[in-house]
Image (cartoon, rainbow over all chains, first blue to last red; front, top):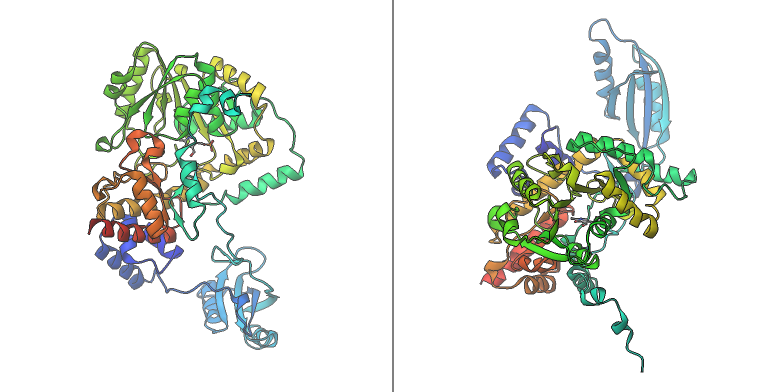
Length: 159
Length: 391
Ligand SMILES: Cc1ncc(COP(=O)(O)O)c(C=O)c1O
């Protein structure tokens, strides 16, 4: 992967000046390349990685395995895109193995998510079955551990 | 009255001062909220699969003495690694010795070779323990000064100016702590020719071999006629971020390794069994672990070197290890004054170049084995500091 993307994935707020030094390219070039990635849709947006368990909020997340029948024209894409259109669906992936689609669905309460599954998802034409698991606690997201970082254990000057 | 205990100490030990790094550490450790660029070990965690394998080994009861040479399984893996990474073949049965860090291996190599009065050539600025280790082995240290003008590389002319008929050993360390210097193929060819002509033995400390940023590492051992006269030292501290495991190794001709093994056998017995298992796991997938870290170090190297140059601290381009060695000569302070004042005024710790030999005067060592966040803040503070000195 392009090192520029690697840097942004680690810290999207890194200044163009710092990136320019890290990659030894002019600042204007950093800006132009980022703009190009945005225009081409390689970079889809920038978000904060939250430790949601620490926020006092009403929210549940379910992971839903969905079996579907691929359609004559469009295969899995059509049904997957239809499902992805629901705002409740945060992420959706086509999977190999025992089921076809894996969804991450958010709602305020268990009942709300259950309602989504029974009233919106399951009745869709092409959906054969669903299996819903509720998430209890987050240990790591997007490569970031959610527990507090331990203090640096290294000696301040060594060796 | 009995003489004081200090008078009864071994004179070599008594006469050698504590490491200049220790000294500076004592000052830094009394202060709070210091950003340290003085840390000579990776900020990366030991790869998780290595830590996990260590726990598993502990559970299984891998808690006994091992062969003096170290686990044969590990020596085999190291022998394969050396062949693949450096193009050098060693027989795992009698040409590889597992040690407690490169530190022990250095000591063993010198003690195995030196008779009192034998001269050892080495280049400064260098790792803090070289001179002391030579003296403890009753050798005579001959320091060769390297300079920023040629990227702190060692030349044949420098060696010729110092070597005498009593010179027996040449110690090398590239990529270098504290300068980040790396030798080119041509540089090494010249040195190898000199070594063969003078019939010297080489101890090469290649602990930073994986951490090169602009060209792959070349080992002196890979040159014609060098394998039979070289002790190759390497370890897991730097490239695998395993400093606390204390694991290193020496490879070389069987006679030399056997001699080192004897000292090791009588003084250390063997390296930690758990650390050896951890090392075995580390070697299972070196490419992935190391490549990630190298990419990150390279970006940081680029960042600090250009930032120092822009603020008026001339910094030669470090090609390996994780140290920048900028010159502070232009701001009108010596290394120690600069480091102390920077610490007091801006709470950034760097190490005075003099800790690595007298010719380190005028330089400070800045380790970039710390997060980009820390580096950015440290560089900003140093910039502010340099400005106040200039005005
Ligand atoms: C050049 C050099 N050799 C050896 C060592 C010590 O390595 P180990 O942890 O394997 O004893 C260091 C540590 O900083 C070093 O920089």
